[in-house]
Length: 206
Image (tube, rainbow, N blue to C red; front, side, top):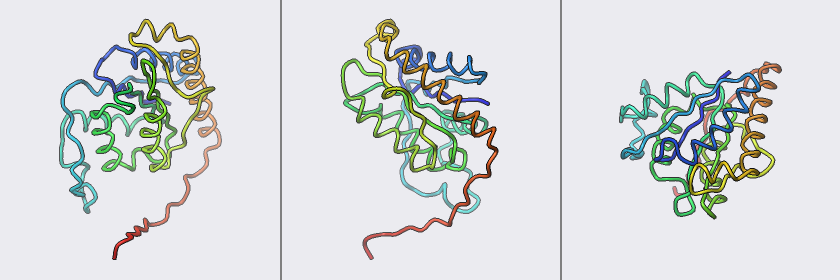
């Protein structure tokens, strides 16, 4: 089994990489594979609400940039997802939200029912609102949200400072252990997925 760890920071080996690496070490100790997927630091196309991805015979988003296609391909083969984000103005970076908007809406079937969690790093504050933003992707896609011993946050302005956040590092390891426990439990149970009803859309203006 494999967990996809998304590095949503513009810094490839910065604070979020450091936090996710600690999660990865715990996953490895539990016999699970993982991959850290960096979204890069270039401009990211956001969703334009064209709904073309929901038309019959559509093949995902109309924008076929490499970041989008790579992300979707990795979601096809992973069993769980952990998204890491630094705090920018008490929220995730816009580039991360832009790609998540697109992949979650146009490639929903590759996310459904896969366990998920988010990891947040802040210098001082803004973690709670960042959690709130990211967790909404998981809950709307029926992804079981995996928890840790505390909120999944680390603190620090540099990777070295993050490593010195001993409680934060322990929280990352606990998250990795809990994710492994969730995946192994689901595999052992081997239960069929819940039956989905056809979507009912209720608009409040008629």
